[in-house]
Image 1 (cartoon, rainbow, N blue to C red):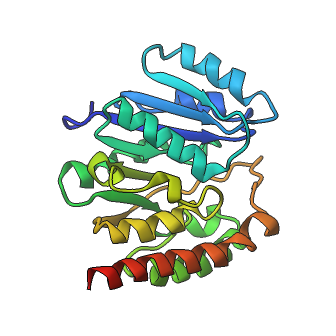
Image 2: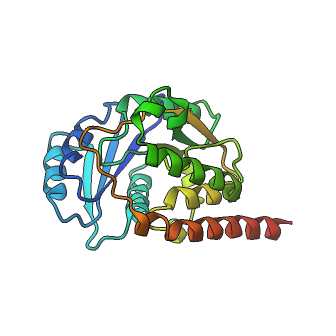
Length: 246
């Protein structure tokens, strides 16, 4: 428990054998439920996650997708399990160890204080961003963040691709998880649907982590092709919802 809230953490993982054990072990003790979702990895992610879960009995559950469905679908699976387990706040931490566990309370506090319904990390608010994040990622993130500000309607947020987030269960229950984009672009789509639900969204600083062995799973096929479609769909979905209300 943290500030009288039952806290769940969803960890989507695909071919993260190098980091998944440490990622699970480093989840703070304040977390009540850890939901690891293996998205049909081809490496040893699943057995290593299961071994790490045994060290935290009663806390960690490892779920496996029979076929690869995408990071967004893995997060949605984790969200459903967290709701079933009665979590009040559900955070997301990637399986690659690129999210600092010490930042987790900073993500939960605005929800605990009823200042936000959804809190997302913003690495550009951290002083290490310009030296830690690879230049190619900075450029791409700047462009996508600017576009997402328009399509989502949240003009005050940035670093749209940061997956380090926390959400209150009452808002999560209003989101149609089956309708969300299942792969890269999930955060952009989710933000527009949060806007439709009237969710209060805030950014908090989080530390960017890119170790010496960092290798991105994002390429032109996974990013450039779907993102324009995701942004257009997100914008049109939000616009249609606003027109229906009027």
